[in-house]
Image (cartoon, rainbow, N blue to C red; front, side, top):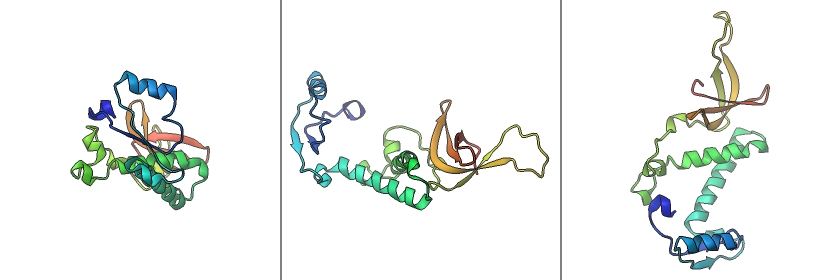
Length: 171
């Protein structure tokens, strides 16, 4: 948070999960002159942790909706989670002067690559030596945005061989 915003946190709210009780974390705070004023919430009461837990709830809720709508198996939840984050960072927020988090962070938006999670996708096959009447695409399922060789593209799962493809040439 300090490197990203230049602001030193004044307090830390935690749900007693233990991540912020380690000696390593205390040493980090001390090394960076971060005062540790801890507020503990009651177990199972995430709403008491304010903004962060609200965001975790939003991401989790979207992930569950994506999984239900797509009908994909539970093994695909990490892709649904990543897709939920990618969707949320493109939505303008009032606390950011109605700008999206990706714009505020200075990164380039990639909303043109966002499609409904789990939708049908056809990946163009390159260098196909076939007649004009044969298919030049391969069926797949859209799982979100992927990165290959430093370039963003659409991440597509191919059910016939359980492979993943990242390509910009998807319909």
